[in-house]
Length: 513
Image 1 (cartoon, rainbow, N blue to C red):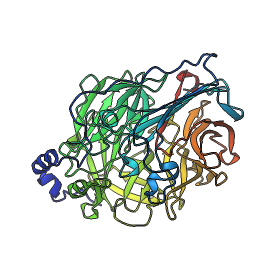
Image 2 (image 1 turned 90 degrees about the vertical axis):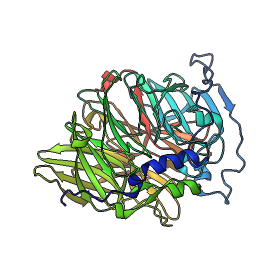
Image 3 (image 1 turned 180 degrees about the vertical axis):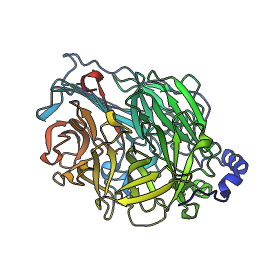
Image 4 (image 1 turned 60 degrees about the vertical axis):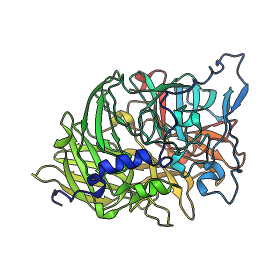
């Protein structure tokens, strides 16, 4: 399709009105009373020396839940293992079934939505909680979980404050990244929050020494050659979309506004070795939904259309080139790479999102190819697989380069979302290597911990819910033989609610570089 300029969207035309109305409409969006920083940090956790091992401590954070996780009157995202936990736990010398690979020495940490105060109106809108397991040379040394202590979490207000979200006002509940020597917790909006790798305690909001003035969303990309962190933020009022780049030491190098006409929910993006790729799709901020409350402040508006943008590294945002595509929605890209004039991008594509449909939104593998050779971009879309797959990960040492392997969670969405297993996808053959455990075990997103120089050589780590015991487990799979099942299972002393995205932080990154 040819590039064209669409009519100015009403959200853009009424941006000033939006800003004033947002600031007046108390309680419609996330905020916390006052403008102070993060409150008191977590107390120091117990050390991992021998005198502390085999002990389990818990700290409860009020208020206690008003309904049980199994209450049938609660919506699905407050029942079962979607329901929040209310204890912060320290446990040591964890039971291991099987044998942990000795090269796994480091921290596996995952973020997720876990309301600390008022019940959240949507699965995506709880306070951030980190769950981490420390592994050392074949031992499971410790497990900890900690809230990310944002002002919203400290106030216990959820998304019912007196002003719009942004800056420190973030639930920081989606993902984590380790970059520039810092472990950062990330949300859909707002600043990152720095977290102590040793005990998962919150250090505080991280704005790159004041250089970051917009949100930082949850899916940054690290270029494996330069070590630079590429990321972006979107807002509810202009500038709607801003792209950022930080160097390997964590210094923000540049920020540039990408002109767009509305506040679209852009959850993820992709990079090659030459450019950043954005997809702007018709899930738009909806002020009426926000004022009404009770859910995500976004709605499906297919008349807005969809488009993919290509922005070369180092270019200004206004230099982005767009190509129109059919309306759809993509939470997560898998990976992208250059193939001559083509930008090739694999994604987990949904037909729609937040469209008031009672049917769950299934996600399938698609390959998008953008031909950049002409004056105008052209686009093709190929469906690669019919399975319901999402929460993808690749070998991050090959981000933005051609990759053969990707791993995802599998789902059953009839009638509600159920996690059913882990799948390894071979992009060359199209084959799916699937581990579907017994029904009582429900694994989430897998994360690769490299253990050799080749792409995909290593171990997949994922938290799973054991419905038989009610507790969580950490499962370790051979990334190139997923169907063989776990090589090790670490039994945890607490429930780990279903969450979103994680990271492997090795003690010695050079060992598998």
